[in-house]
Amino acid sequence: MKKIILLSSLVATLLLSGCWDVSEPQRMYYVLGIGVDFKDDQYEIYMQLINFANVAKSENPAPKGIQAEIGRAKGETMEEAFFNLYRSIDQKVFWGHMSYILFSEDAMKSENTISIIDSFLRHRETRYQILTYVTKEPIEEVLLITPIFNKSLTASKLSNPLYTIELETMIEPVDLRTLVINLNEPGHEISIPFVSINRNWSTTNGQTMETAFTGVGVLSKDGFKGFINGKAARGLQWMHDQKNRGDVTFQLDEEGDYLTVDLEKISLDVKPIVQNNQVTFEVNVKFNATVNGFKTKVSGNEIRKKIKQQVKKDILITYREGLKQDIDIFRLSEKLYRKNVKAWKKYESNGKIPLTEDSISKLTIYVNKVNPGRKKFDETIKE
Image (cartoon, helix red, strand yellow):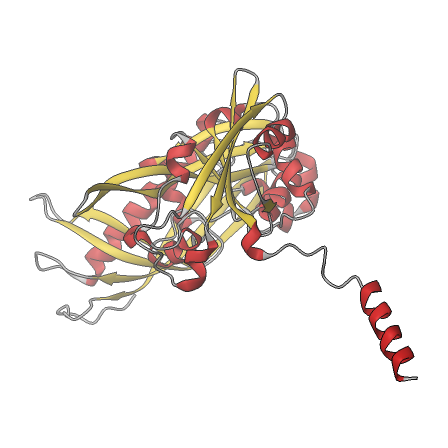
């Protein structure tokens, strides 16, 4: 009887499938980022594969360890380019850890940008939280940049921009979910962070590079519209719906003394006004300010005045730059859509309402309080 039971157990064990179809983690390659270019009517894709052996051990990888390898391939379609690259890969590729897509300027300008995005959305292993970026820099060069102190690529600015936002929120991250929502809703445009290479860093071994967010590239459902970059993009940081922080620098007096003030935006209110068959907007932005140092005697009221002037200047420069390229950079059409859909239906054209330099009829900057830091002004600082 015991022999029969033992034999039955052995047969049952052999019939069990177990985990034979599961791939071992060490036998897979993990995609962190994808670069997409478009040249000579062909797709050129860059696949960034990372070494998770370093990531699992420590936030600081082994000094001599290779953090990533970049594979490159071309094809008539993006899918063909990926399969051409697969032919040179000797392990299974796992897409579940993919963090971002980096578009070149040519790829963003091509008429196939929307279909490229759609391809990533349809892939069964990718997620809606994948971040999107655009650059004019060589894609391979950007993908090979490692974070400061050679920290893991999973903590890089491109794969995890949240730490950068804590320092300064000039450009908001955009994932695939946000991109799809903004392209489908009025005014059918999305501002994608623009990535440049910063060469201002050095180590004992020589010069190093780091990525930086310096502006946006604007994509609409009808195609790419253009870039707003550098100083022309500074107004974006004050027109986010969320709380954020940044800085302004202004001249205190005619003698040439300058002051930099940290600003924390605590609220933004955009109110559409429909009157005389015209739509205008009243914008109110409220800040707290921190003064970290100054060279001359100055009052709280003087600082308030300069902050208001500089922030207003930044916002209007960005807004006018958007108008030049037919871009609703502050998504004013959506503000009207949310608060007065009847008026939006009356005035919209292709999801957008006509905008002019006078569409922002009132721009009010409030400085709620000024914190002098460790020093104190002669007067009590109150509005």
